[in-house]
Image 1: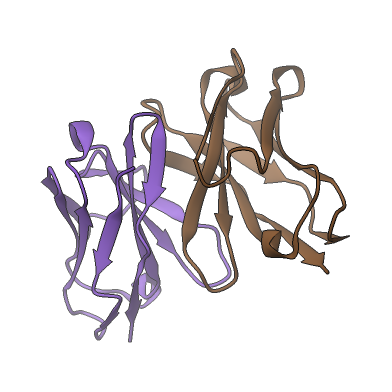
Image 2 (image 1 turned 180 degrees about the vertical axis):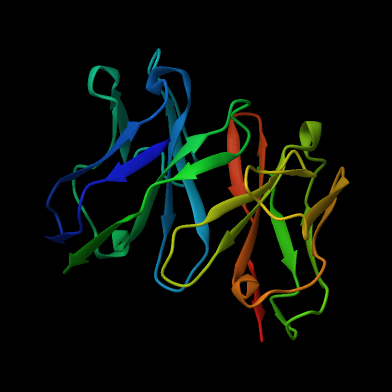
Length: 119
Length: 107
């Protein structure tokens, strides 16, 4: 069974750094794209970026490039989303997603990680 | 960047009725790389339709997708109580994935 299990909720202050994780299981982690999607409270879905763990090829949405870093460690089937300096506006639910075989849609979603940043 | 516009914003229907949701793209969607997701309150989204018309694994036949180019439709033939949720369309092209703003289907 394919599963994406994300790290737990985080409460941080503005200016702090953070790295959240997403562990894949039940499939060949290296051969499927893994992405991140943001959902602010009561709002829609925003694609942030995506990585191919096999060769670390990474793509970012223009809205998030330079704001976050996506990485992956294929040896432990885990992808990461990282901030160097959080802002209150980063408060949101973050989902990791698996790209389907063609990479055009997201067939599995993690349970979400709620990040709360206080100013 | 392709912008997806969903309509209506909210659809008020009763169980058993037919729901028709629209997703319009600002440019033609390559190879019909258009997907639909359902998000129930407090839950992560789930994939319903990919490739504009292909049902994802385990998705009931009452969900169907159609369209091409810039105009796409998700149809729910007969609404079940669990179908009242928010629906998002999503496209892929030029190494970018974008979502529409969502349509809420409410009782």
